[in-house]
Length: 244
Length: 244
DNA sequence: CAGTGGTCTAGACCACGGA
DNA sequence: CCGTGGTCTAGACCACTGA
Image 1 (cartoon, chains in turn yellow, brown, purple, blue):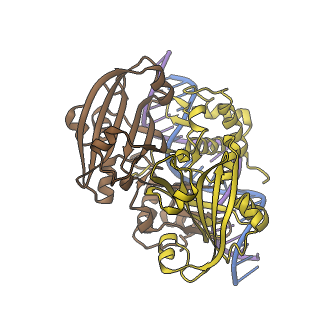
Image 2 (cartoon, rainbow over the protein chains, first blue to last red):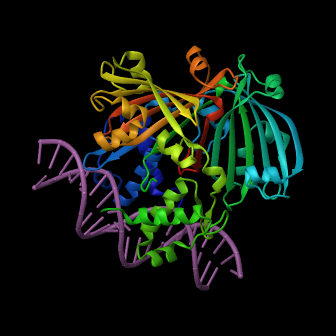
Image 3 (cartoon, rainbow over the protein chains, first blue to last red):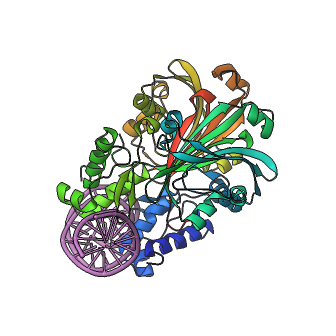
């Protein structure tokens, strides 16, 4: 299937919501009428609606309908902690100019400490990148990426200075399927003070990321140190069934 | 239905994963065999698996199987940015003692600025709480909660000093269904310096939260200022269909 | 090739909300 | 009461993986 039917209706409804055709707190058409209008089964409609809900666009209410809970100005001006998006993609979405300086690229071996923190197999060969990312010309993020050599044998300087993920997807055919992120705050170190524009503050926001490729291999571990000014992550949550 | 079938199999598999019966990078039984074993249809099995994937427990791979990607020690020692969980619940889960001091409780009216930031209706009457939360005896979080009076007419001091959410759910029958969180870093202000244990740093982690109840009313806006030491949020992401 | 997950259907019954 | 969303089924066909 080129594009699944539920993706089409997901996109159609999302676009409608983002354009304001379905404003904040209004209701979407009912599942039955959507199924009829799009000529698909109700199950497929429900699948699209589930994705919309998981992204914070709508909230379904039994007996009432499907309400729009998306607010344009709040939910489109931040990085996504939920969602897999490269900095280059986020920059395009937010209208921010992203530049990247490759500071270091080297081969290494995953030691016990790194293996424990990252889930990468101990003793494996890995490629480490250190990159400084500039947002609208201001040094904002210090990225340290570690890739399994087995999955990512090398990364050309040019790719490292534009988008690593575009290179992985388009050249190597490696896609990130799942990713786990951890956000904390740490005292700034000498390197941060040297490179980042901290606006006089003494902390950085740290985002660690653990990624799995489409073959289920944990192949990437990244630590990003963010200047406070540009640390801004958004996430949506729904009550889960069977929550402990 | 008391508990849905998919909730039961979700819980069963999650427990199995958390107990190590299905270790990191192992495979679950196939969808067909799960359907047979639990005596339910494959669609229902898939629904349970989808929730497991959304919580970062598993990753399905076409033609191969369903792989476990959950690592106990990494994913159970942090607050959840994905997921709706009160601080009291998180404390129990993490084995942290949570104490709360109510600093202020007052009625207010939602002005234009607050309405713009929070999504609460301008002019509405609201109840504002300011609370200091202590984790294992150390002042760690300054919470500012704003509730629509229409939904939450009042909160007894006792409830404010234990868990507001338990009070909302059990006494008022108000459940949070969807919630949007925004995490940033800000310079510490005088109040933070006065109350919080900042470990000598000059920043706080700020989490803003916008919540909708089961009737679809945006009824709560919360700003939490976290001491850096205890700011630690985890989030999992999957590649979405139709990602921009 | 057999077995896996991915998509989709048509229909059923239930619980809930509002008129 | 009717219309809404919530759950569940049985079965179909597809695309992909690995032996």
